[in-house]
Length: 435
Image 1 (cartoon, rainbow, N blue to C red):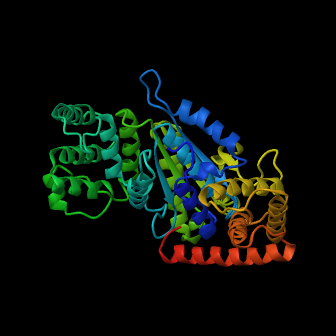
Image 2 (image 1 turned 180 degrees about the vertical axis):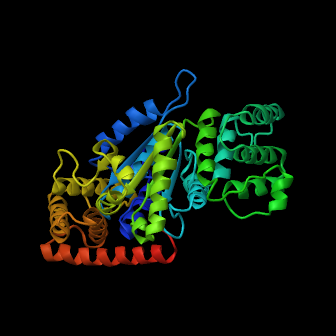
Image 3 (image 1 turned 30 degrees about the vertical axis):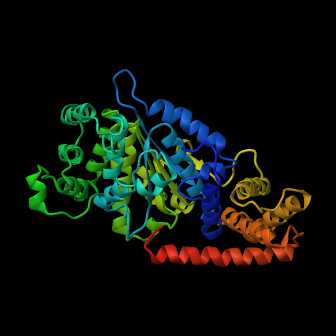
């Protein structure tokens, strides 16, 4: 992880904020304000303590609900936690829930969504985009364990050590699904031996994609991925990662920005509830998904309109399990918005040599934009996202015109442009089948 943001990274952060009001896949920590105490507590209590192995025992598991209205910081928070987990050598899966891509009533598709998005700690910015996927993740972890054995190190002794470790230690790692473990072993051995066809076949299986049943049987893969095995595969993934010591553990970050549960039929909702309750939350809390932190970002309606219909689920949504981002302790909303603007200004100055200079006028303009964002939304849905996008637009305008005082009407015009940009970005994301 980069300790300091450089110009290119800063430029990507600003571009993402301008377009969608959200941070890019890497860089959320450079913008974070207000939630640092919560992140420190999750890091110290869970990532560095409960989830870590101790005295020969597996690490524990934990589930937390991240609560906020649309556009008020859930994705930002999850991205920050992703970076924290990466820094401690956890692998992470950032999953955007939707009925098309990851319906909770379909375990095999939940596993597939995790398998497609999971990744090890990026070593370069390019890794963030190119390092996704369970096959790539296992390759990177093996490559780091054995000094570049898959990325160009020609040392035959290291390769022999890697082969021996995969065939002995990894093959013997206890997991629920031996089929899943066999697929990982077959994939890594094929990569070590240069058998691209076999490696690709095992990768398709691991990613939960359709493959030839006969070809899979020829490499020892008989267990089908379906609704009865989907969560078993997911648990086996987490078990294998920590028990093999390839990673410290797993962080599963689920972002339900679109209230996908409310779009389900009553029957599908019941199944989704049972899947959440019985196969994720309970098993995570009982240690059957070792070394795993499960964060599920939801809007407040989840607790008032969905969980209340399922008493067993509601019991597991108590105050100790919920992190409410709407009211951060000790920070007024207007002050939070201004702090966010100040962070953006700092990153903007790194991204552009002709960024507007700091000063009293710029500070007053920031206050004006923050007040107008608060007035227009009344701390409702999207206050913070609207503020972020509008302030970026203001800074971009100042690059061209110089810093000029903004009136309330000026701020409102910028805000209207920001709203249109956010709506267009939202429509584009929906059309592409994403979150």
